Image (cartoon, rainbow, N blue to C red; front, side, top):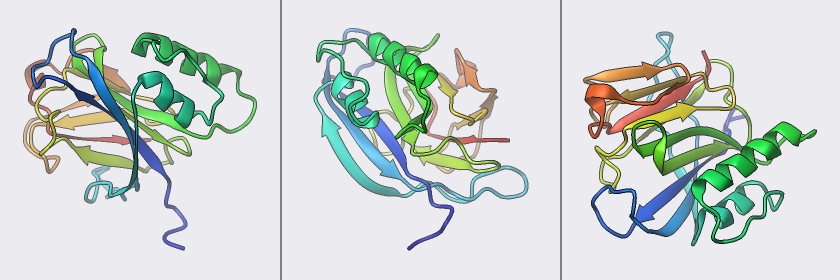
Length: 194
């Protein structure tokens, strides 16, 4: 067995048909990627990036949410991302047992949490003084995010201009409806419970 502290994290990754970032883009595949957590140093910064462990892809946000909730949230395949998110919030609020996965962070292609782009989840809420880190470099999502928010105990989201969590940065507690001067400049991020 690897590390006792190892948690599972999944990334729901939306692949768009066209490389441009517009609200009319069509989703062609939504992938759920399992990641490992990363340790954080005494200053609350990640030591490295989360490692990808596994990947599953779906045709719609509804199918991905059914997977994430182990069938507890089953929506029509035509459900919008807003409908999927609302169903998940209702599921979290009404659940009396531990969830299969908890949403940790969501990123959007536009300000004010519009045009869903990425969604990371974990089998447990954000651990105390722990978290996850990732990058968008070498993906179609590099330099596209304009807003985002942390969830499930991850009360801090930090975004960075460079892929190694350096250079210009912005901290959000727990979210930012705009990344301001970092709009369309975000290449890496981390979430942490502090």
